[in-house]
Length: 109
Image (cartoon, rainbow, N blue to C red; front, side, top):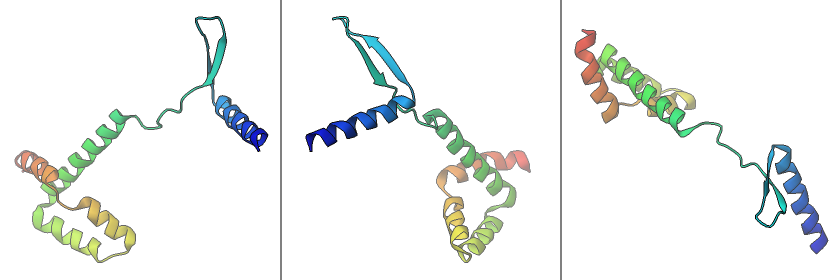
């Protein structure tokens, strides 16, 4: 039982080291090899920029179409398939998009 756990732990460490590793020398002279930590595929900065661009996109569409037309199109989405309902939920008017549309609106007209 104890042997199986040790082998499983070594296999897990071997798989982790296949993705990369670092070797450091401790103060006593022993070289310790550890697997590199997994990095996020998407950085927080790029996620923040994507969300900001999405709100700008929604604000631009809202300013371009107007609130009445935008609401009509959302109503059509709410009555559609599951994917369309999810799209309607994401695209519904929120305070940030409304604020952006109010700022961009006079420039478009």
